[in-house]
Amino acid sequence: MKNRLKVLRAERDWSQADLAERLEVSRQSVNAIETGKFDPSLPLAFKLARLFGLRIEEIFLDEESSESTS
Amino acid sequence: MFCSIKSAAQRRFVRTCWMSGGLVAVLAVAAAAAFRLWHLKGLPAYPVAVLPALPILWVLIETGRYLAIEKDEFQRNLLVQCLLGGIGGTLAVTTVWGYMEDFARAPRLDLIWVYPIFWLFVGIAMPVVYRRYR
Image: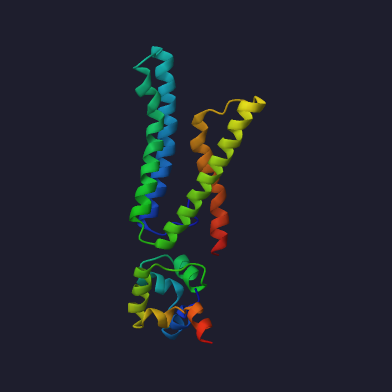
């Protein structure tokens, strides 16, 4: 699933390791989510949203929804 | 086991695997010695014969416990995929070998090999799974 994690992380000047530490997961997990190779569970997605002060849909892009509206 | 240890749960799991490997070796030698010394037969032979299998059962339980306590869902997902590779590989080898035993008179494959075959396939699956997320 496409997402804006890399941009949000860069805005805060956080490395993948910094974000991983805040989420209490491995850096490998952050990388897999960021590159869209692994979709996080709802609890982890909410944790990300809380951390960035955003809603889940502002971080993760619903490609099917954006395709149907275009 | 893992490319690099990342959590307390992983450290515990890897430690268990190593300790279990050592225990299997020690208990297998002890059981063999007991059978040689006392020529165990019948009912008393069963508990002694089972001894080397106990650490193996311990690892299976610890595998389940690791999957239950690991907080990192991505790491859990990696291990589950590797375990599925192990299960698939073991089922494939034992099924094919079973038919070869039945129809082609292939040498008998002792059930004791099922567990090492399982972990062999887990080990084979590991780099494949990890490469997918690199």
